[in-house]
Amino acid sequence: MHTRKVIAMAICAAMSLQAFGQTTPAPTAAPPAPQPMLAASVGLQAYPSKGQDTKQQNIDEGECYAWAKQNSGYDPASPPPAAVAQKVEAPPPQATGARARGAVRGAAAGAVVGEIADNDAGKGAEYGAAAGVIAGGSRNRQARRQQEAQADAANQQAQQQADQHNAQIAQQQQNFKNGMKACLEGKGYTVK
Image (cartoon, rainbow, N blue to C red):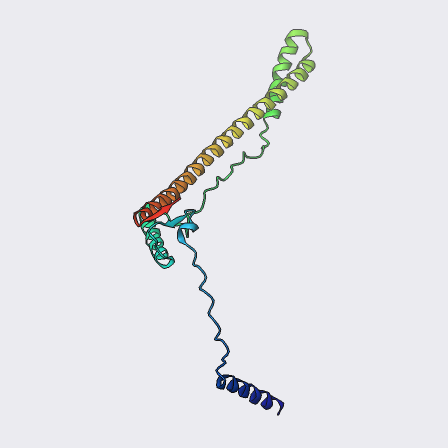
């Protein structure tokens, strides 16, 4: 029952205001928010030099955007992904047996030399084995350095290819901006 009284009183108040010529002001609509300009979205500022209104500028920028996209082959709304070089790692060291084989060869040669030089094949074998281990280790290190050099060369080549791809994308993007700028200038805008 209370709700009915409140509604009735509100209606009476509204009617009395109308009767005395006083009306409540109609709510005013908020001015429309400015639409984002396409030129600004790609890093260009377009000033309407010939007094174009916002609506006309939006139309012109849309046409120029489509034209630049078609002529450059680049779409800022969905740019191609940037290339990232995949790093190649040198293979982990493998047990090749080069040191053991070097020790056997060195021991055999050392035994022969030791026997001939001072009639002590055992001592010659020890020296030969030690020299063989060192020679085998040297071959292992040399092979490892070659593998690392190959991996470095592959990494440099992959990075160069990625850089070249990214440079092509940057050139397409610049061609797009140049095309959009030329189009807008042709339609009477000052573009920076």
